[in-house]
Image 1 (cartoon, helix red, strand yellow):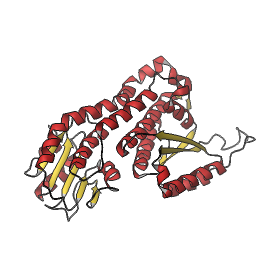
Image 2: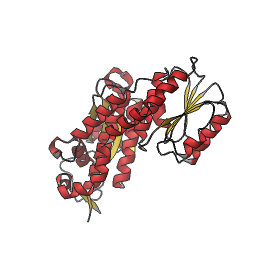
Image 3: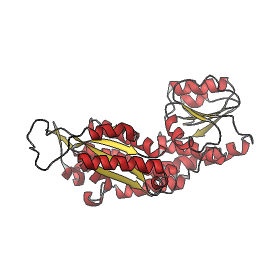
Length: 344
């Protein structure tokens, strides 16, 4: 049976044991800068050589395609589809652009999709390590490799999104703004910052005795919510759910109303109650009536059932920077949750 010792979140020896994981999070902004800088010349060359005509459609292939879908679907000027499997849609051909994220570059399914795109004569742009299996399969007349080195999914995505923005197929994904947003989170959530003023440590404490229900209103915030829930499950071994409001509402409604007079030793009293974690983009969510209505419904139901609500807010300036900020804050909280959980 595990219990949560919040004193470990400010304990130097406990933090030292988690230094590698926390340092990796703190270097997120630096990885974005490194990847963007390293690929900038190749991106400029590929943009200069790109055809003036837009592709018929953009296909994001491979298991990391969902992040590109979350960014591009609302704004891509041509039809866009994410295809996470090891193949391509049957209609894909020479008029289409296939983009692939392969941060590690050794996935055989992704390599197979790239080879298939080359065989069909598609224009192919792959962000991956230049000496990887995927890069080898990207050798073709209409294929280009945007070189990466850090194995970081977000940094690799920023490289691809920078290219797509410059060829007029996606929104702005300014690497400097993304890196700055990540740096701000790393500073505010630093292990050297006291838990009283550390949003990630405070969130971890709130999650310690609860089942997290993570919700984000926009497409990108919802994607961040799913990634945060995955991190919590991985670090704690506990249940953590992420989903649309319609999926989370029944869980909140099913929570037994809490009373200060409840017997803490009664049967079932020790069960983990849900806590609603809202990932909010300052200003952006207020502009969308649907998102506003969903949030108000979730908050009203949580108040009615006595379910605690925690809010993670970002004021970053671009969509990708906001996604990065929300994701990193949640990932820090998951690591602090891992740190504080102690087995009896």
